[in-house]
Image 1 (tube, protein in one colour):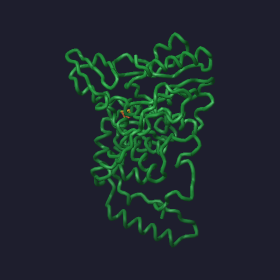
Image 2: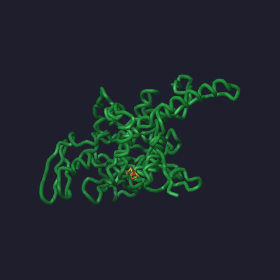
Image 3: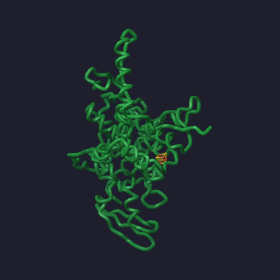
Image 4: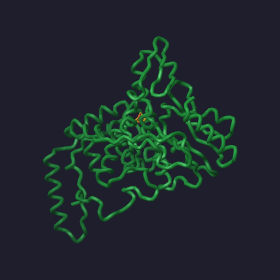
Length: 54
Length: 315
Ligand code: SF4
């Protein structure tokens, strides 16, 4: 799925897949940090965004 | 009449006469040149309507579901692979199918042919490897090989993988050094250029869903695009909705698509929706060594689990 999104032009670093048990708090924090850094580096996403006119 | 059409008629006629099948699903000459359409033949008199030529671009596996009795179906290489997929997915019972296999030499690209003319084509006559096409103002003879559809030019399974009867001799399969040149070309672009490519590609999409209806993979009673509660995707021309439709449509075909080209054949806006699905075909092949519809005994990759499945994408 990530591959097809990347093929369409959605950067790979925007989509992450992880398996974290409810007992793995440290892993959860580490992964969220890593994802945040990667997404921040890419900047805001403008693709596949739908705008609603109020 | 080509020998293949002749054989198909003979086989169909014998099957109907012996009451081995209730109906024969095949192709008939359409009302406009270069547009063969599917036909269901139930009586011997109508057998004469059956044809097979290089304009039979739709996929007949789409018509084999929900029959009570036994049916016969004409199957070129890709149709046969989709029949296998139907059997695997419990949409058709192999016992109730009589498959008349037709080794195929490729379907012609109607748009490419039409681009030779400024006015409407009024006649298309095939003769072996060539075809003669007439409009009101000119006549052209083409070598069919040069006007094949893109998917047919890259086809490596023109001979049906399963059949009960064969309507003509099997041909030699080509082997390709680079099987996915189009996917590679898109893959070499940067993210924004890729996005731009798909925006250009789908900008004329009118959401008619012909591509979905022509495709033998789409048989859900209610498609996600038609669902109203919950409504998964907006129904208008908003580009995000159009993108979402195409993305999800393609993903639902992952590991199942045989690249038969029926979707492109059916699109009234000439959109090559295969640009999405071919990426998934390539991935299925590279990640799982899988090509859809070759084996009735194996489950498709997204339908089965193996400890060897690639999983480095999960962190
Ligand atoms: S057939 Fe063409 S226009 Fe219609 S929904 Fe599919 S891509 Fe869009």
